[in-house]
Amino acid sequence: MAEKKKTRAKMEQAKGKAKEAAGRAVGNERLTTEGRAEQAKGDARQAKEKTKDVFRH
Image 1 (cartoon, rainbow, N blue to C red):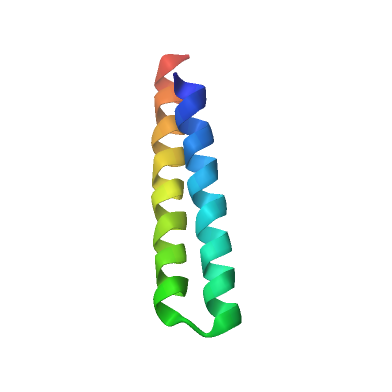
Image 2 (cartoon, one colour):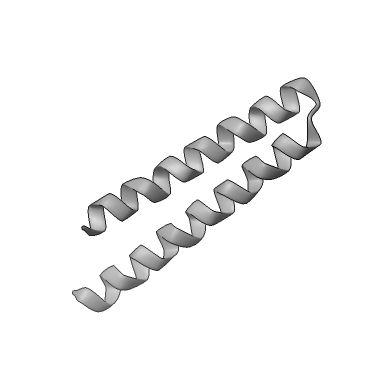
C-alpha cells in the first residue's frame, strides 16, 4: 500500500512540473500556479510517506 502512495506522490510531482512548464511556455500564470501547487502537494505526500517509513522500521 505504501508503494502506491509513493508512486502517487511522484506522479503528482511530475504532473505539476509539466503543468508549470506548459504554463510558462504559453504565458498562462494560472496554469503555472496550479503546477506549483500540485508539486507542493506531491512533496507533502512524499514527506508523509517517508516519515511513516522511519517509524515503521
